[in-house]
Image 1 (tube, each protein chain N blue to C red):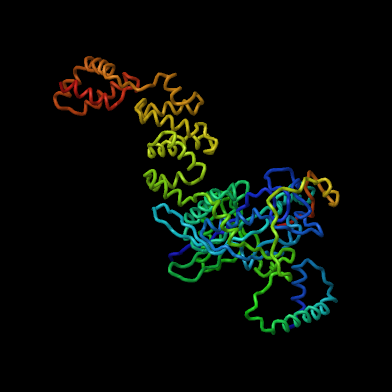
Image 2: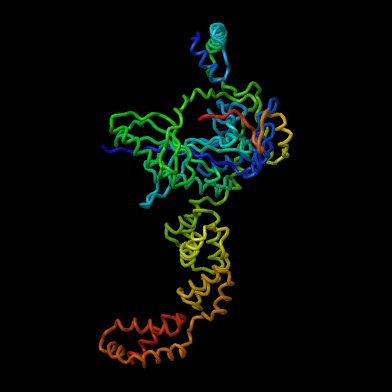
Length: 95
Length: 478
């Protein structure tokens, strides 16, 4: 299976990654190699095998419904580039 | 051409847990921005989600409430998209294997018929934060208090055929989640959010038309208006030979119209995949049973019991079981009155309902307690007062002038049942109106009603009307 340069650009856009034009061909080649490996795995007969959702054959531990996190807003907001009236400020989102 | 409307609803219910679905931060509504946003909610590197057992139990409650299969094993997935109120760059949701499978709900339509609406699934997911676009020097403000609040997304089958059916279904879901105690159902605050998928097709067609998804509807009234607008919009497009675009549209209540938001991205653009930070959720039979034994009486069961136990008409039973609080109030009223369930139903629905409506109050804020209303009904039943005087007493009770007995005593409203006293008033009226007596004796029966009115007036409404009627006849026929 081989990915086209346009598909590489689209995937990069969805993941918000910037890919320079001279990198597209190499990326297409690398990603295609990965997909080839997936194709080879797909060829293995797995009928009758339940797919796993996680590599560890374990189940989710649950947490009691209790509030354990105190308000540490000031501490967390020291990490942020811009805050105002308790809000984190980000570049304007245009809908 | 005749068109048929097809509607399916996606209802997001914020679950009434204390803490968030994957973190120990509080879910309380209305705190200052970001005071309930911990590192997990902020999407800081290195944090891990841990699933809240309370949220799982509430999802199971809903599942049992709609007769659905509960998945023994369900999986959390990442739904990838970029928006600053979703700091991780993905929403943790359930995709291929949701915790609640196929179920159904009955809705009562205005013509009295009952229709079953299929529920496709219900899955657990986390809510996003809020973006505030106004007044930050060209920046957007982000409040992540809501980020990570547990949501149960309840997806219906495309089974509704009119806006009225869609509203009935949405109301029924709201009633159910409130009975189950898993969501407060407050649409204004966004605790219950309804998105509608709507399309139209030629009547008789088996294929679905292209649908639009309507968002931003925060009341049942707006849901109905938004659907009506959208159906009309699609009909005009199709009748002009055009095609409906599959898209998301926002309802604008001020303009009463829907507007295109963005073309819906292809579903696979979300690139769902199992979240490696979370193991599969296992819900065993013992857990399901522990939830089942805690289930309250559900709305349909309560309605049926009100019909059989209190002999109420279906309409009354539906109105009185619309919320658990109202149903509890009604039952407490009947208990306090020592019976008279139909009289109690009338008082709760009409007199009390009118007062609550006028004052914009909830039943839980009623100015008259169920005990007090029951006490008033008792005085009607034992004929201390007439139904008409009772309304006067009730008004005084609403105004905070005391209980029924206190008001009756203070205002001297006790019904006059003393035969001697009533006869004295009858004598006065009869003696003062010889002309009408002549008419009555000449066979004009209607005059009797006039006499009853005069005597009631003389007693200032306090005489027992039946007694007056009977004694008048005796006097005039003598």
